[in-house]
Image 1 (cartoon, rainbow, N blue to C red):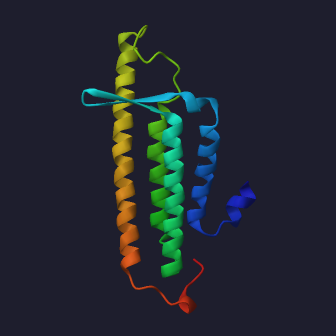
Image 2: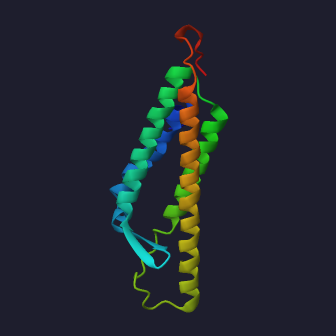
Image 3: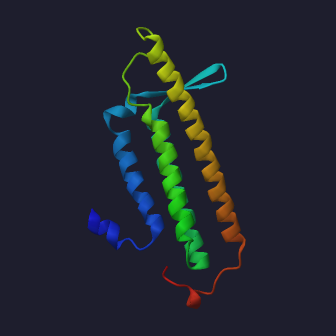
Amino acid sequence: MAALLISMKKIENFLFLPIIVLVFYSISKYNETSIDLNVFDTFYVIQSGIVTGLFACWLFVVILLLKLIRRRQGLVHRKFVFTYNTLTLLFFGVFMLGVWHTSPANGAGYSNTELDALIFKNKLRLVAVWCFLVVQVIFLIYFFIQFAKKPVPAKSQGNV
C-alpha cells in the first residue's frame, strides 16, 4: 500500500483511496444504519449507504474533472488540490462520525445529558455538511476558472 502511495505522481489519484474505503463501508454492516438530520422542525432519515455511495460518485467526478484540468492546462495546483482533499475528507468524516451509534432513534431510554450530546452531534454534523458544500462550490469555481483559461499546447505541458 505504501508503494502505491509513493508511486502516485498525480495528487488527484489519492482520491481513489477514500472511494475504495467507501465502497467497503457501503457493503459492511454499517450500511444499514440511518442518518437523522434535524433541519428546522423536520427530521430527515437517510440510509448511510446512500450517502456514502453518492459521496463516492462525487469523488469520482472530481477525479475526472481534475484529470480534465490536467489535460487542458498540463498541471493542477498541488496546494489547492491537497487542501481540497483534506477539507473534503475532514468534513465528510465529521458528518459520518455520528453514524456509529446503535441506540434507538425515538429517544426512549436516553438521559438528558445523552440527549444534549445527540443534539450537539446533530448540530456539528449540519455545520460539517454546510462546510462540505462550501468547499465543493469553491472547487467548482476553481474548475470553471481553469476550464475558461486558454489550453496550454501539448509540447509545453509538464508532468507536475
